[in-house]
Length: 88
Image (cartoon, rainbow, N blue to C red; front, side):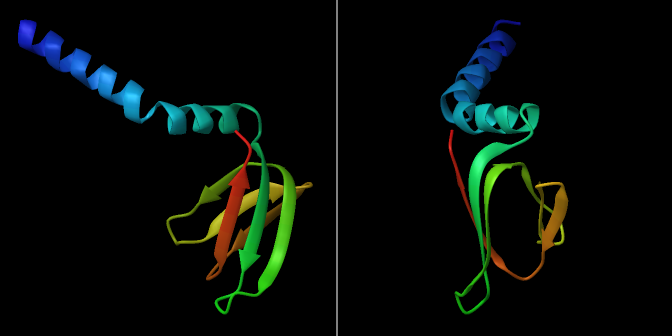
């Protein structure tokens, strides 16, 4: 029983030290309808295809696409490079 307790405590400490920032940001994004972000979408040759700025919750899909809702519209980008800059 003592070994299980120690292992559990090490796991909790590890998660709190290494995963806390990203988990906190994910929770904040999910609960507030997104974060204040700038999203830039680029073509394969580096040209800016589109830019968005505002409160946006963005998701990566299993197909490799990126999906987000912005200003009442849903956007899904395939085969593009997407840069996101979020305020924490």
